[in-house]
Length: 431
Image (tube, rainbow, N blue to C red):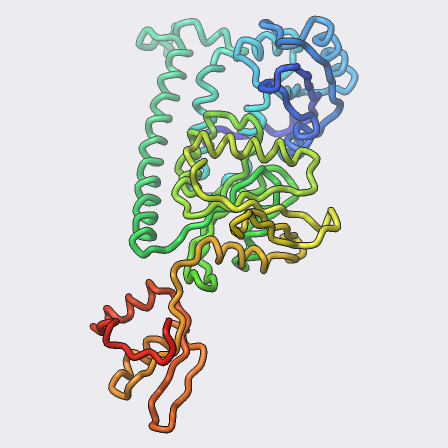
């Protein structure tokens, strides 16, 4: 990682303002979850309300003094704002408070930096960090604006600040080249799946909705889960079998959050592309959350931003064990499954989800009883290998009759491999 996290310095005063404008509104409870997920110690929460942010300090003079007193009282070494601050506002606040100041975007970036495990994930986080830093280079470092001079310090006539910016730009270009290679590899894998006609299903949803728990339940994987925001950052893909569908790819993606920093959306484009290229999205919702409807809207907003709004989706309401509800499938007027209610933690209702997925993804199914002659032994073996034989019996003449159930795609693929014309087959009961 390009940046090392500082040791200590995690005792924080939290600041949250209420604004009348919906686009600027944040959730104070979510700030507490973010702070805990980052490993910081929240000392006190200072609340206030304004019609609009102050251009200089974001907060007013009175609230600024309240923050200063809270820092002294609690011996805090960090102030965390539940809002996005301008670089100039951060610099002004740090100068006035004599304390580190971090906004919501910086806090989320710190969490992402802790969670990244794979090579791709670390590159994506570092890219977002660097692009975030470029606008904040001068913060608390006015000495960098002087040109180098003195013995051993004479440079090419540029300031230290210009040198830093040049080095960061070079690092950003290097990371973008590496990520481009990763994206090419991902695109190659996707094309192979498309050519093989393997459906792809992506789990999307607000952070901490239980996506990884459900992913583990369905795939029997061991993806890290925790009751914290952004427990999963790196995408995980598993192949599973589904009745009437066959093989499919299930992807667990990074959780969304309100006002997800645009730079993060850009940096994680390769990861989020899994959702864009999916056959079906499973939009997981924390059914027990008081912010349920708002969280749904926030996820739909991010899906719109990444170009996945048109992908068919199935709503999955999780954590019904906290609501004492029974698992069920809600259908529209045409009988199509639209919502599934379940508990990923207990497993209750997960079979209904698989049923709904099968209904939404199912291709044409071949069902019937096929007469197989002795010279068609390879056809019989191929059908057994596909696990397509429901029942096998022989009539009085010793003719083999196979009761079949398999996808039309697999059936026609087998006939093509064996060079058998579909019209030449003899069906006892029509498929």
